Length: 221
View 1 (cartoon, rainbow, N blue to C red):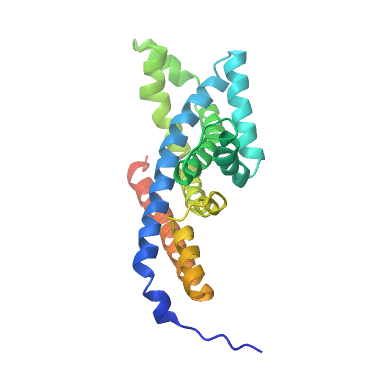
View 2 (cartoon, rainbow, N blue to C red; view 1 turned 90 degrees about the vertical axis):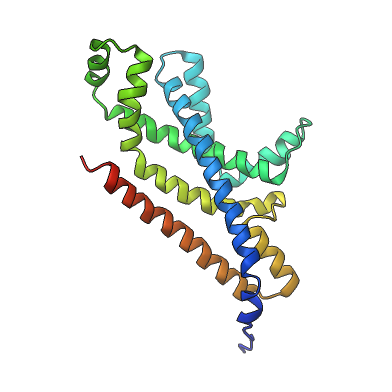
């Protein structure tokens, strides 16, 4: 028989700590995206470079990132590297795992975006006296990021949600970790995780809505 006694006041008293955890969650997601985008651009260039070694390295990265669980990638960053004497904190392990995953998915998105840009764009830049690198930086890269903007937004949302996987490496300062710690102390499971779910929802909706506003502002033409 259902006899659970809700104690929302007790759970709401923990809201400040949960919001602090939410800030850590957003920090990890933003850093992982910044790293992921930078690495993804390099991976994309390597895959299209024509160099077999660079292409093989980039393709291997993308295949592992896209075809293994993110949980496995975070676990290997923490415990796998530990086997080689490289001991990382839960924060760094989680950041590396998510950034690795982001880079793999974004590299594939960027490759598709580049394929959608006519080669005549590069030739036009070269005809104006730009080097290959300058043409890519000033002409191709902005168009590529524009085409891949919405997939990048989806990956950002995914990065926010992936931070909850930090539990496997004893991460306890993010939103999920703080909520789990509070639950172990108070046993207010339903109330605490319901509040955490609302916070996750608000964060992800804020990201998607902000992305739509940015896209409408920057990509009108």
